View 1 (cartoon, rainbow, N blue to C red):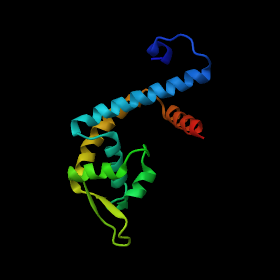
View 2: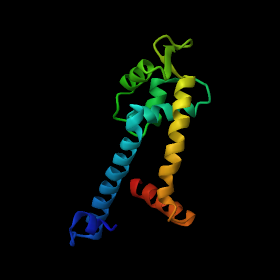
View 3: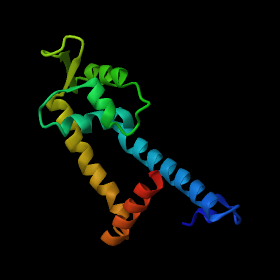
View 4: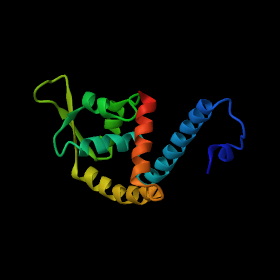
Amino acid sequence: MEIASELQQSNFASEEAKAIVNVIFTGNWVTYQQQELLKPYDLTMQQYNVLRILRGQNGKPMTVLAIIERMLDRTSNASRLVDKLVEKKWVLRRECPNDRRAVDVLILPEGLALLEQIDEIQNQWAKRFAHMSQKDLTQLNELLDKLRN
């Protein structure tokens, strides 16, 4: 559905203004969809992001600072997020052997199993892109990258 129809607004000050509203609206729509997808797992998007980052380490620990550098939402309190994941027994937090001031975080098998369950649902959700060609998706990614530059 076009943004004008979605918002019941026929006129925008400019195409730039329309694009800004469209990007914000679409970002919020995707965020809401993802929150709903994760809700049954008692998992926030930020916690999910941390788990995915840790999974990408293939069993190697990461410091909280390194996690922050890779997060989608860098304003999140990563230490608090890690504490919540420790409470849920999805990650392990331990003193870094090389630097006692640093803390290593490692995903546990339970965290990996949870991500596998969510992966199946995410793959179903990703089918919403099925009506778009690979060329369209590449162009979308390029345009979004270009917007941030």
